[in-house]
Length: 420
Image 1: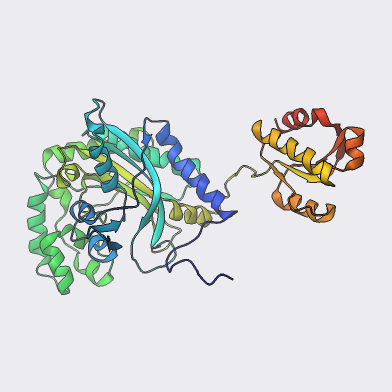
Image 2: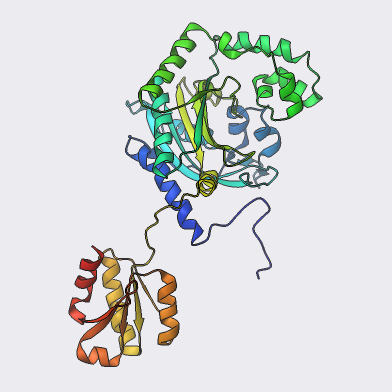
């Protein structure tokens, strides 16, 4: 037992469970790669003001959950609590928006950090795959991203998830709604912190999960009644595109999301098998974020899907992924000469694309065969001095138990044929 343990609220990914996480990341990113999204990777920490401006100073993420640090040079940095602000900053810094091909379509995968109360489905270190389409205002783009996320989840075998959809309006109509909502909220019996939030970002109060707050929100002004004609038309087009694509969704007029930068389209993927932490991913349109962090006007839309919560959703539905075998062939040498010979065969198999492993450490036949069983290999190669003298290797089918002698020069070809 090590003296040290993983920090509270974090986790280690170790085999064999880590293979599921890798498969989930692959499944989520596959539709993006097939739809013109290029990979981007950003640092694990950024200037703290990037998140204060972009995510919003009134959000719990900025006020309570960010991990911040001061460098030896006095700079204030924060471990990234989400991906969008970092990706947009990187795209602007690299002038990707000036390449003449908008939208700039990017996808990413990485770890993010928030100081939250640890519980199942909520960690202080978590993994996400995200996508951003930067520089174009088009309801088709909003629909595309929602459809690609739906496609990714269905490719994994998930069925019990729901898509919640709403519109948050824009800079033309949201101020009118903001004023109406503030007037309603000021008359409620709320704590001082929530009252401060009313003045900074009243929409966040709608996202408050406390029952005593939600009870008082009955009769609150509805954003849909304050949308301007342009926002109404935009939202109806997104809804129509999803419907025509056969993607089911639910209108949720209280859906706000936890970040300040969202405008117009906002959506969330929820899974009813996860209890309180039901959101497995979400996103929306953020047309003003570029200007908030010092860039030009670049209307954009994106999402992030939680890898951890997606794995929990798979477990809740009892879905077992069809994971490729980590080892197809396992070599067991008996003696030093066979050790050198079979290691050469293993190297040749690997170079030809066959997953192969080796009984290291000079173990006896019994112990080595136990390792071969545990490896999950379909075939085991066994060779001793007599086999080498006869120019053969023993090839054992681990499923049927059948063992045959194969000429040494034909082993690689024989395995390639059997493994297809």
